[in-house]
Image (tube, rainbow, N blue to C red; front, top):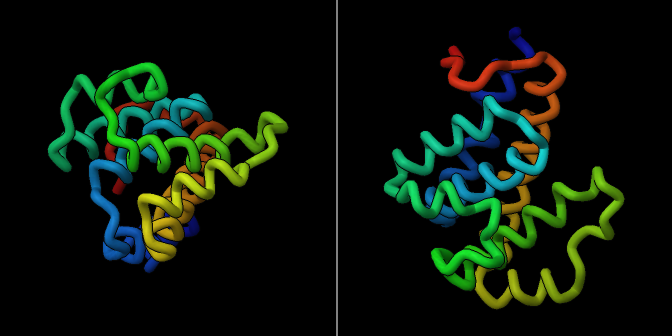
Length: 142
């Protein structure tokens, strides 16, 4: 589909990659949002991306329970909370609270927060497309 290919290969991915956020953290954000949205294709892809970025199976497999698991830094927890708040809007959640913003601002620059938000938004975008099209996990996109 040319429209989807255009989105995948545009400047958004390059801006995210150049935004000063650890690729392992971006993979965790992508994974957590995809888990919430039940997008198996993106869950599969983000685990592969996390491994490629150097993350461990232990951290990747426990991100669904990041609040209870001891494997994440305070900065990663702040990013995951922000990503969850943006993703859970579909559930009627209130979005990012002042406490979530304060924690994010304690760990990231304004540009980095923008990158985390863009990664979250783009993930949610692709999750919805993949779920609508019933995209299978493990497919290699061209």
